[in-house]
Image 1 (cartoon, rainbow over the protein chains, first blue to last red):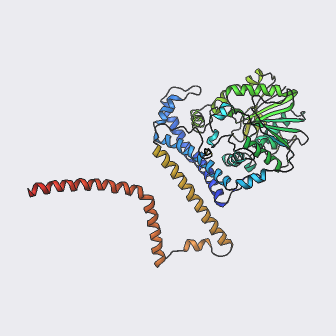
Image 2 (cartoon, rainbow over the protein chains, first blue to last red; image 1 turned 90 degrees about the horizontal axis):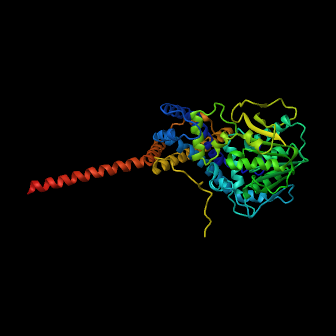
Image 3 (tube, each protein chain N blue to C red; image 1 turned 90 degrees about the vertical axis):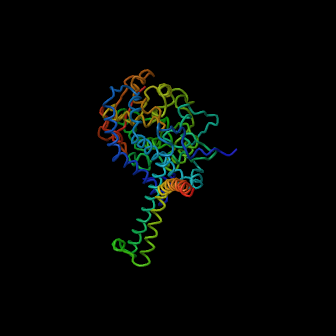
Length: 375
Length: 118
């Protein structure tokens, strides 16, 4: 399934995007197991590594030319993905821009011309996506949103709901149905909504509720608005910092985020939790959906992969978020009875579905990590 | 002032320690070439399948196709041209190394010639 705003690919563009996807899969399946053995053999001679610092191991690995090639090919495949997607979008940018201009919208998009993105967003182009989350050419520009939408679908390699890329949203709704079945939200907020893939998925279960989405990039939010309109969902998108929005106290019944936390910082995560508490009315529910940590725990290979993400895929908080005491932080911000576990991935939430929330992770893409609480 | 084109390269782009920029560049070029080759091969596959479904040819016709005469000569030219293109950097380095050796030999011969004819 796709949607009308999704950039379309010609025969050769599709072939190019599939090539990048398959190159990434080939690297993961054919090269990573070998590279992993090399990493493990290299680390055997070193004392036990603790925490995030893999300095001594990194130094030994970087002395190996095959390791340097591994870093290089891995990053290059990511850069090729953005190049392939960007070229295809630029070819059809006029048509996409025209399509984004919806005459009688159900929802809205509110851009703040004085908005300054937080430092962890402004300092680097996350995921090596040129222009990052905030690139904007002004009035009517939607290019960066199209990049995130198409690129995200290629990057997730079809494991997050294909071109809809919305399994996280459905899984978050499932968590709500399963753990807080009595909540009938009238006002919903998605923090760090990006192009609104999860926002629209969650909104689809609550057609009578007012749904808001907050994020940092103007072009991204304009695209999110157009995407929601073409899918017939009424969503209000607002450019704001999730650490401190302008919404009044206790104005939402349900506040959630999908893979927002790992794109922030330790200090910001704390502020976001506090902001969720401020925004919820008593009895309201907060859910944060994140990438589950690797089931094998903090193996040396997991650390090396994390090191790559942080240094060469511009994900500085990727490892840090996995060390955060999310439950403790939630309690600090005023929530009691915090739930922490893993919700089985679903493409369609239902109040009648079998139990899918567990304390055990079934692995990345098979489940999503949930931290949730009622105020 | 022209708008800085930030849509081409992400920043920051950390250097991989001890990787020479030349090797990094070359790796990226090889992957790009592989990408182009894959796209072209896929397009050819589309053409073959469309021709087959239109009843114009069968896959087995392609497998059985073995050009003879002038067609075979043209094929060979194409192959040699392609090999020459890809192997060009190696050939250039080899030619350069050879030229240096020949230059030294010529110098030695010149010195010898002078001594003999003195």
